[in-house]
Length: 582
Image (tube, helix red, strand yellow):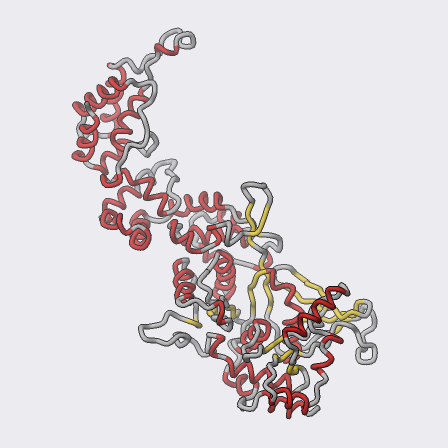
């Protein structure tokens, strides 16, 4: 077979060579970490994307390297209009920024043209000729071939393999027919209009004694620089050093994997190898579900003699199922917290989410945080060695606890800006109220400077519900008066409180007036024989103050009442109490 002639038959319009593209995309600065995020534009961006992007960003930026965004949009069936904007805006919300790659389009810009950087296009749908040039090279070297197997033939092969309990796929004897087609047969098939894919011609994983000098147990280095091959009882194994999992060993690939589909579109396996090489990616962060594909990717890197990037296969995100108590993978169908939209809708501050993710990502982060309570997370030295290779357990309750600590460190005025921005998108009907930033800042600052500062603010939706009583439009009395206080006494307590109320009182003066009401109305003394006659006990100062608290705040639990009244103002306090006095 004249493979060069075959390559020209399959790719007559491709005149650029891999060397042309090597020159177009030169090596980057030596020693710098280059990472990428490569999402598909499906319209759904999830916590796993943020998880991986955070690792990418930390690895690159703490090294002074480059983090870029590549859109893997070769599957037209999964494409969703506006998905690229969703990806960028969602990650931007969490302060994940890219140094180059796909960017937000300006008005009138065509899809796939908005990008920044010298290694584009950063949309795989725009890189078709590049993939075909490299596929043409493999064909010309006899390392790839056109396969004309029909859907019916593929189904028959699969049925035969399943019946024989064999590995399914096109390899070995199942690939021989198309591997061995003559040039004339290929040409005739194409002229007849038969559809075909281009498959990589795998060397297989069985040791050929005539062409392999390795004795059993012996090892040799491959072409990529960081893969070792080993003869294990006649089976070729690959050994790859994963930055998270350490050494990974598995049988080398034996599948004749499709690299170009019948429509000329590359598969993920092929496209990512070409792109990661030309964009000079040094570290690839991806989920553990791609581990089974690693032998295919190793073989492709080997065939091209490309330096293979360092792979970082992250652990799958898990949670404890509330019904069974067992750990399971986070589910798009069952778990709303998998979607990044969940955190934006609820109003989690990006600093809180990132702080929590670091507790999952690096086992030593919490210890570092205890030693550096006020330091920026950017000062933490992130390492892949401290990442877990087992399932990473996601705990929403722990995120909430961490969020309380994080929000306490954010200045109230800055937190007010965050609340206003959140309301602008997710609670626009409350925006006119929250836009009084000075008033909102006072509310959010309440109790933060105490010896034991209050930690009850978690996320924007919860915060608004928590502080809603400060706004008349949302003020409601949510609870009943304490059972120890009769309706008549409650009315009398409010009358006396209003009669003695002076907004200029300091906190001690204010409390002494409440204590006086408590004593005068007989709520401060227990009967001598309380255990025998508890019904004679009217209550304490706490019950009296709860009546006042309910009238002013509408709930029995809240920060300090005096401080709240200072923020509400005298008129609002008097108005609310007056409305409840019969």
